[in-house]
Length: 331
Image (cartoon, rainbow, N blue to C red; front, side, top):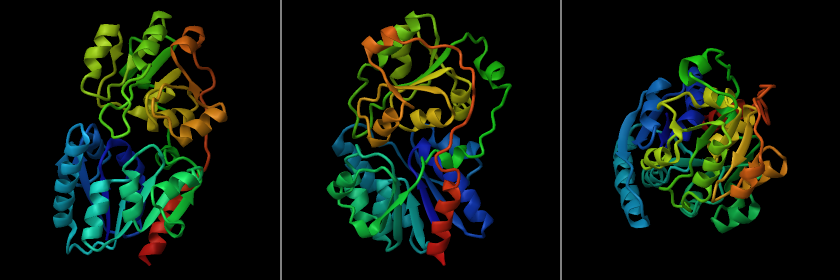
């Protein structure tokens, strides 16, 4: 049996295709989920059977540490004696700790070098899967011994976007009334350990909204709705199909990593105001696929209605490769 822990929304998207493939191969999968953000409704929408364990612990290192320990012990009790042979997560620190406590073989996946808690995950996991461009210096700093590091080619978002099919009815079903150009925005997190606040996000959004673009916000933090109303920014409904939303947008303004990379893969013009920019964002900026935006640059930027809507691939075989590694380990 394989145990997969889902601690936030992007992890659901990443692991759902892996779960389906493993079960197709006859592998039993135990799924645990933390009640945080859109994790639970997204897991239900994707048809995952799971056990709900733990919830968001709150802001601050002390509260986060206490919540981690509580959930780790709860997870330990849930998986002990269940016949689990391999524990997988995308840097779910609670699950990594619980897996080691239970004597399981623990793997983690990670594609962000700005997370301080990598120190815990990379040291405790038996195998650390990182994106091919992950800085060697960061691996050393986080304590990931070279013998345990496995690099994968491509972006993790390709695992679930590989079979993406656009829904031509999405704009009129979800976005009407719609004006072009449509700019979708996602704020930075204000709850993560690496959080540096909103940065220029709201001021940049104010500039774009003032240019007459149809600017809409995909809420992340509880306070986002209140701030958006002060700036006259419309909120998008939740839950919403993120990939369809990005595909049918003319531009995306990201304050984080996952949706920024989804926008890149879906061929949407992508801007970033992420205050804690990581190595992947830097590389995508060097490639000209992500544009860094601040208030001054926003004043001069021009956004037009998107013409060519073409999906981009870095490694269309990533799902096959990741599942193959898991099956090989189980053998």
